[in-house]
Picture (spheres, helix red, strand yellow):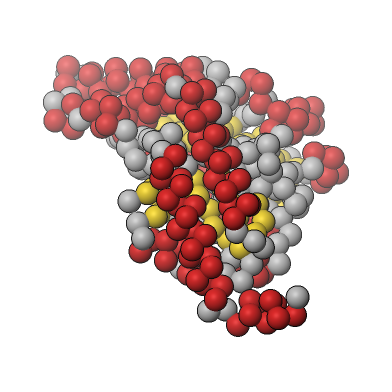
Length: 389
Ligand SMILES: *Cc1c(COP(=O)(O)O)cnc(C)c1O
């Protein structure tokens, strides 16, 4: 099997699992308990908070653990919307956000909020001048993702942060795809809130966090016990939080080396595809791009058929994003960068990890060339296109 779907999720690193296990088997006490069985968990959660805060230049009391990226995104948007009602009901985001943002925005729209979804350019970049122009006196929140999960484009978050701060507007970024891949610093980025998720960086599924800058006036998300400084109730997912921190530590230690390796494999795969498969287009920005992201559109091919056929050959990739598979609509991200339906439907995302080898990439490229060729042969539109040429 060749795993090329690391933007969907990653393999939990063995050292991460190892770090988690004692918190299931030995230190299973509730962190809120005052006997020592609980205090081990409490200590571990605090240590994890320190590790993760340090990784993004935050203070430990600014980190709130959640059940994942989706919850962090929901919290940031819904709580900001509620807390800023006195100022207004206008939110600015982009057309290429993850559904955790877009569907939460829809939910808010149904409740009387107004949402401006900014266009992006052909490469997937948000235009800061356009964003400035969209700001109104009643704008309460700007939410722009740090790096896109489908096409890998990295957004100008520092610039947007500067604009938001100057105008006194809350600024949130979904950094789920970026944490552990590229350096992040909440001060440099000038963000007030930042979402992240453990399972996208070789951590466990079902745990994530929301960074909330101290002094930011947004409310609690889950109501109940006093956990997470009364802002997110519920017994802490101690093993998950410990695993999250272990994954962050691991990612920080090897970030540059890992990125370099992924970048080399990515560029090699892009080059092979561009040289060997005609009528294709690389989606996303060529340089401002996540190290492991490869996304192509192939004309005269159905992305779903491509993914299925590659899957039968043991190659795991995706078409559109995992959250939309099963739906027949072409990806909202590919539409936003201006692809025609045909190109959007013929898209393939391959997201690499440092664990991939050159041999795997060669096999995948060979297999992709053959599969695209075979699928095109069965496509009457391709036949007609060749005749016309
Ligand atoms: C995966 C992902 C999410 C959702 O995170 P979960 O932890 O799976 O809920 C949100 N945003 C982006 C950009 C993602 O890639």
